[in-house]
Structures are given as C-alpha cells and as structure tokens.
Length: 445
Ligand code: F0G
Image (cartoon, rainbow, N blue to C red; front, side, top):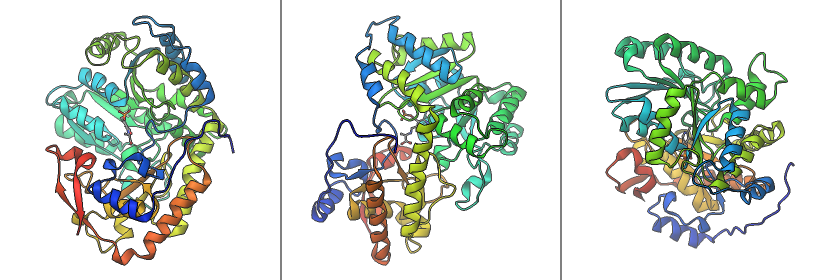
C-alpha cells in the first residue's frame, strides 16, 4: 500500500429503484448519468485521478503571467527531464495537442498511419481531410494470445499501405502507447525503433501519442529483452526519444485533471506548432493551461515515472482483472495498463451485435452495483469492425481494494441472471455517427 488518504470524498450507492430510474432517465446511456448516482466510476482514467499532496502544494506556486511565466519554465524543464524534448507547447488537453500537431502535419488527401487511432486522433486527422489508417499487429484482435506487446504497429501492414498510396501521401506515422483502442496493450521499444527507421525510409514524421507512456515503460521493463532492471524513467526517455514529436494528454500519465502538450524536436516544426497553438490554445508559454495547472503537471510527470508508482498502478488494474475473471467474466489478456477490457460478445452469446452486448453489460453493471464502465464495440463504433469490448478504466490513486471487490461482486450477480439480460436499440442519435456513444439514447429490446 503506497498511499494513505488525506482528503476524503463521500460516495453513495443509490438503492436499486433509484438506479433503475437513473438509468432509464439517462436513456440507457451512462454518459448521461449524474456522477453522484455512480458508486464506482470506471468510465475513464482520464483526468479522474487523485493528485498528490506535492501537486496540490505546487498549485499555489502558479504564476499566471500571460507570457514567460516561471510556471512554464518549471513545466518545460519537467517535460525535458522526463521525455527528453526541449520544445514544448502546453494545450488544454490531449485533443488540443492533436488539433495543433495534425493541423500542421496533415493535409487534404494525406494518409496517417497509427497502431490504432484513438477516437479523437482519428477525428482530428479526418478533420484535415486526411485518411486515418490503423495498422495494428493482427494478434491485437486475439483476446487470449499470451504475447507481450500486442499494442505494436505492424510494419508489414504499414508497408502495404505505402505500396497502395505512395510514400508521398504519408506525412506521419503514429505510435499510441499504450494502445488504448487495442485493449491498452503496450508497444515495445524495438517496435518504436522499427517505426523510427520506417518513418525515415518514407520521409514521414514519427509521432508518439504518449498519454500512457509511463505505464508502457513499466511493461517494457517487465517484458522486453534487455530491459530487465531498467527504471521506468530510463525506458520512457529512450522510447520517447526515438520520436520527432509527442502529443500528450496530461490527464493520463501527467497525473492531472486537465492539461496536455505538444513536444517537437525540429525548430521549424516548433515555429509552425506555436503559430497554430496561438490560434486554438493560447500564447505558447501557457497554451491552454493556467499557470497553476502547469505546476501540477510538472510535478505529476515526475511522479508518473517513479517505479513504485507505476508498479502499484498496473498491479491494481491486474487485480481488478483477476477478480472479474474469478467472477466469471471473459477478460482480455494480458491485462492492459489502465483498464480491464471484457469480451461482451462472449459474456452474452445470445445478444447479437445489432443489439449491443457491450451496452447490455454496461447497463447491468450499473443496475447491479452502481458501477459505470464504457462500451467500445458496435454501439461506440458503428461503422468499423471492432470486437464487442467493455472497458473498466481505473482512475489513478483513487479506489481501494473494497471498491474492486464491489465491482467483481456486481459482475458475478449479473452473470447469475445472464439469460434474462436484454439487448438494446438506439432510439435517438447525433448526426456524426462516430460520436454517437456520448449522446445517443437507447431502449431495451
Ligand atoms: N489519445 C489517446 C490514446 C487517448 O486515450 C485520449 C483520451 C486522447 C488521445 C485524447 O486526450 O481526452 O485529453 O483530449 N482518452 C480518454 C479515454 C478520453 O477515456 O480513453 P484528451
């Protein structure tokens, strides 16, 4: 146990009737629930964690000068120490960083390669008129294969895209570490090295989406030949150091509730990034962030690469996976760094994809235990071919073993009555299908 509680927030489990009423009022979409009606909130690990006492203390040092604040200097130094990048522009969160970087790198008719684009990454690339193409290793789709780096990018697939469209149309190759849209699986340093060489070959920029870079580095230490006994900080610097640019959501391994950044190596690219940042985020020494938030992220980035922190973090996710598996849920293995992914199609074989088995599991976990998870299958991604996964993401430094047990007990109760669990159909949805899981309404069928 690495933490003791210093500030307490009360949570309450609404009774069964209240949960049923809340779920119905939310249109069976857990994004529409009031967070007060949620007992264990595993919707996301993004911006929902607890800051340390050192981070809270750093907030008071915040220098809110419009330009050249001392908070920016401390932030810049932390980014340089932790990532090796000396040119950085803060943004309000990860997607702000994506808008700034892809807005500069990608144009109409381009193709961007990624081990798997996260939703907002895909949307920003598409917004430029470019085509986001996923090239994960095929084993990423196998929930049982016991491979160490199922998050890797497939060089074979990447090369065949080059053969199809031509190197000229590919301005960037992206590695998302860990690979959130592929069950949070890690990417090896070797794969990053191969991608570096490939990007050089086709004269493209090598970008790392670094949201969960520290968790990824932990898996490298645990699994990759040649890194036994290395520190997370060393591995992180080595892996990130291979890239030309980073996009970062500080809400993950920056250990803050808001913030992000773009970091680049090339001075010319830095100039272009700064100009676009001024338009969309703010003056480049504060970007989208308050001075105090820059301070908190400066401290958070350093804490994120402490070995003991990351080990505790990843082990807690694994503990939740073991408890859920003991309860009878089919869990994606190996377990990722920030979340447990459950195969909902295997959980409810009688609910076909058109009736959203993942959403059925999400609704039942809330009904049974006030637990909020998220569907990442045919409901969230209507026009793509994705497995029917449900993600239970753990906020950092937030929940205790009792919470994990509660989630597993709720899962066991759902499975006890799995024959009577309904599927769902969409009754209203927004005009952009790729964003529908945030605001669509459903009903049981
Ligand atoms: N890239 C990846 C891999 C992400 O997981 C996220 C966010 C972003 C970019 C965008 O960052 O939210 O700070 O704008 N993922 C969250 C999630 C929302 O729940 O997985 P952001």
